[in-house]
Image 1 (cartoon, rainbow, N blue to C red):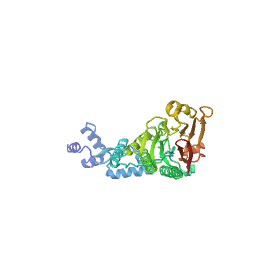
Image 2 (cartoon, one colour):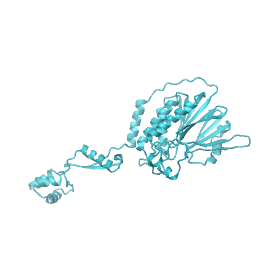
Image 3 (tube, one colour):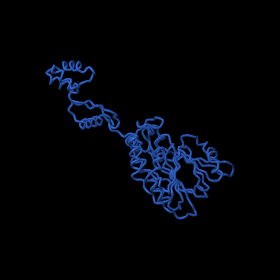
Image 4 (cartoon, rainbow, N blue to C red):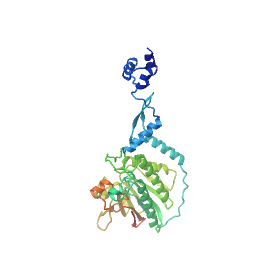
Length: 381
């Protein structure tokens, strides 16, 4: 039969079109089609003359109308007269982001000119510690009374570091210690959750948070290195345990050619740094109990402990100020433990719980080489 030949030669024609061509009803054409194509290939009941571009545009419009982020749509169908395509929406994968990052590093890969410093006899260390920035956290002013998102987070960090540099300008700086990590990024997964799976309200996608945090840290390091050599210390944290480490490693790769920038970015939870007679520990603060930190310092950094007179432990995580002093013996100073403030606003959950009174700030400290911490600065927002 002529209709059978047509059906055999045109397996992808839709039922309405095929039925019209063969002079059959749609149901008759479907039955004959199934007999001819015993392999089970299906034709399509409706003719779709949309172009792929129109289909994508319609997808975007539908998502926008229903409040769906188009980047969350993993797959969609595109059906035409000749094809039915199960298409994958174009989203940024980890591999793509990594490849883009490698290309960017190779393209940039600067040869940093060594900055020769004048010798300082009365040296000071400036500790710069933007704590719990949470890039990607979303706070809506209508609900919480204080807006917060990626751009505000970046702006506060830059203003905070500039403020610390301005306030410390009267001290001869021998070294700057920049503390990074500590929930710099708000989430650690592609579905807007922390490392342990706690859902979060976010401003932007996970890859946007990473890229914005990277550019922020690069800018801060470039600001600080003009004043003194920079030692960067990374603290892993509970919101971005994996992504935060990757970010620290990326930053080290970025400045790998600079002899004025050094790093300690291991995954260790407690980092120790000796500056003259100062022993400084930094940690996120979500692990060991604060009252145990001095003894841990004495045990884990015993040689530095023995060689120093002033010992400080800077913790984060709580977003508000707590300070207490532990004495190792009568008339001898032991270690001062201190939780630092955060510049990030309270999100919806914290606002409902009433955790809103803590001042938003970035803090810094001046340590004299032989006299310990002699000054502290705060930039409030």
